[in-house]
Length: 262
Ligand code: NAP
Image (cartoon, rainbow, N blue to C red; front, side, top):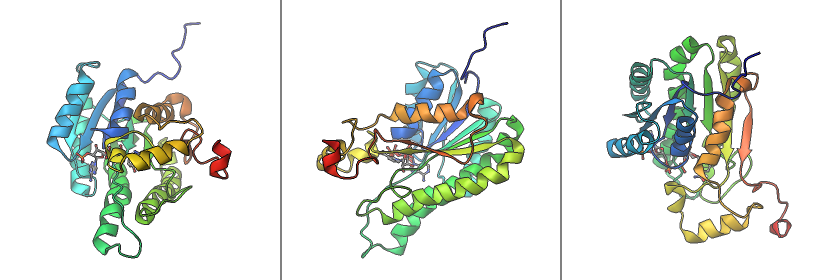
């Protein structure tokens, strides 16, 4: 019997929203390492070009990049069309683009609330809708959402709107998983803890130090470590998993008190 390559992602066609830096770039680089063809996307043209150049050095000819604003459904449709043209289809959508500006509940403006919900919640829905025909045509479509521990499991001052958005992604996921099951499309989520990224660095060194001390594994996560979980959910072998979430947080959500971390 010929050896079968388990967890093979070679030639899988993947689009990553918010794939130009941080966690999305980590996800894209894991898929590229695994032999997939990958389209990265973000709002900034320079960011897209830099990510394509960085990923292409190890995966020449297998990387594409496009600008997108996921809060705009037309822009999501254009991203899907460009990706289909470049990669000849889409098997996997990693709906990862997200923002996490802080705003205290007592002073949060409707504009601040809308901005977070537009990108994190509506952007997820628009990206999935735009890629749906291609995922259906794939016959083994996969959607992997980047949610967070913040919202579904934990809270943090200034992030009530963000937490609501990340929990909303999971509510969306469960019904989407049921609706799309008839097309053999699975919908799952990865819930990162605190992961080294440009966005997180903007929170400042005090925040990073306090988060590191709250993690039993004693370090922040690396973007690739979110990518490994996303890649697993995208494999054929994960085809019977849908509507589920994987927490990748170094154990951060386990301690009952700071003393428990030691
Ligand atoms: P990041 O370093 O700020 O990167 C965000 C990415 O999303 C960039 O590629 C950015 O590119 C893109 N983006 C932002 N708004 C967009 C929009 N409207 N349309 C399209 N692309 C957009 O952030 P990150 O830390 O990697 O976070 C990525 C995801 O992980 C988010 O969903 C976040 O909620 C989640 N997460 C992060 C952490 C963490 O510790 N870092 C923890 C839990 C969950 P442009 O700026 O060029 O648009």
